[in-house]
Image 1 (spheres, rainbow, N blue to C red):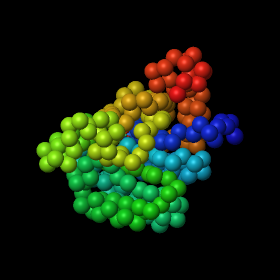
Image 2 (cartoon, helix red, strand yellow):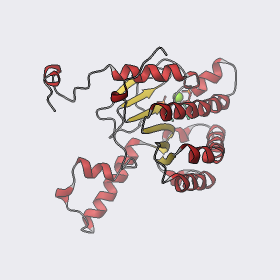
Image 3 (tube, rainbow, N blue to C red):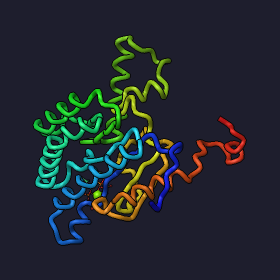
Length: 248
Ligand code: IPE
Ligand code: IPE
Ligand code: MG
């Protein structure tokens, strides 16, 4: 294999902005939905690679709050594809030990999809091999606002005090509660933006932007991304010298 990964330096959490499905299809003169179909297949493959390499947490950005502004037809097709995919994949998630969770404003999704999500979460909740999160109707700002509202309510009813509010507590009010922040964020199709994804959680995430459309993101591209991550120096505000001296 071309990219040899270092076992001790695997990212604990990989987050992926799966972008470029539409352009992948358009380039082939296919309807956009074909790109989304192919995109779901790719996501399944990446899940298997994460299981193979022992990555503990994987989050896919599948549908943003802003994506509601796409044509009604594209939105419906995407929702149908996601429902179908969850139904079909449940047995394999159970078998592979995948724990599934949806993050985002789930109540905005069609009821059928909400039902599938609840069922998949319930039936996979004790699994331990991989925490798989799917961001649906997700917006980073909306998530932070909702956390703030809930904190304000808890202060008002006296269950916490203003002095209790710190970064750890705030994190507990986010959809990602219990999941470590992403170490690596991959975005396909070359766009250099975060598009309202995991705004709080990516404060110190390593960004990896690759110029291929999501449906073309294969195992080699995945390994290249993790390999690239493993050869970076994460300084967290320190100097390179401090790190070499073992400053913790
Ligand atoms: C990403 O692919 C999938 C979703 C946002 C649902 P796009 O549909 O954004 O594809 P492009 O960016 O138009 O090529
Ligand atoms: C980001 O992709 C959202 C998802 C991948 C689900 P978009 O295609 O919606 O992002 P922008 O509009 O190019 O920023
Ligand atoms: Mg896009």
